[in-house]
Length: 473
Image 1 (cartoon, rainbow, N blue to C red):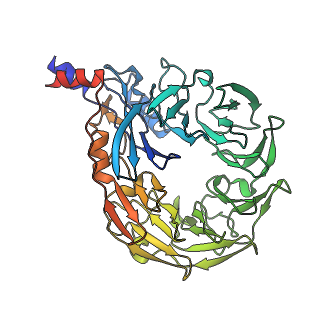
Image 2 (spheres, helix red, strand yellow):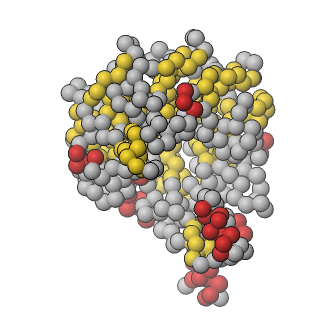
């Protein structure tokens, strides 16, 4: 009995967290993956086969074949009015790599994810109701939404597009619960970026595609929106005040070694003209920069990568620049502070526009005290701020309705499973309450201070968890 209990207490720990700002101002926190899995599986492959698989990017087998029960983790709600945390319901099924979207009625739809194993049922989206704290499975969408992105259309319906292959796109009506298939995308769209345009159409960029396409809700059809230059893949998209979309380039195409195009790789999608239009030259060639639109409508670009130093090591950029949509030009602005630049490495960097017009820059610098900075658009400069806890910026960063910023991540949970010989081994995970208490802080723009938030939670009850606790005592 004791040995069996030891097997049961090897869960796959959550390596990420999804934060969703609800319409009532609370924040819903869900783990990704959202389950404990007990691991005692053995890889049947030989050592040479495992090495070839590892070089090819294969991951260890999923824990679906492991012994012992699996259970989903309860979600957590953060209430800014009390700065308190409370447990709420748990998802009905195991999920990993999923997305969330707030619906007009306040509910939240969770789509995407993947089939964890050949014996597991196909993934199905779920709805979370903040009024009841319960999750509900949308059976009509089962098997249709793996690796997909949800987009809220102007009529309140939800377009769900994406997948491993050219999976059919679907439209879900939250008001009636009806689902309909609306055809296939023109190309493979794996976890795509989507932008709702002012004319009601949806602009779609594949995560590994150098083309863009449009979805027209009126005709329920897809059409080409153009190709990106140099074969590069889009990294982020910002909707400008006039309805155009500012698109920043990422990997792909000719971004290897010294072949990054000198002008930089930014484009504008013009819905009126219906095509992609190149921007003027950036001040320095960069790809993968952080972007955020400022209160005046300009776009701030920070960091990213420039031309390579040697082999496959990119040159990290500490500079920043401004794109002005009115005169269609780029100009330099202040760079990241030197004490931050020395510890960079594109480690979970994020930009958050504050209500006072400044921009909060956060990053995971592995215990370096200067893990955050503020950008002030008036002088155009960055300055460092202290006080953020270790790895607080590695997870979601959410601006609250009162102007404060919540930063939370699941502690040191950096993975769920790995190899030890030819055995798959689990890493003991702390509870959600323990992880939140380690890493949760709030940034207050009024005094530019990070304030730790105490987490007073007890482990929620469940039958499998109760049996497990009895076995290990």
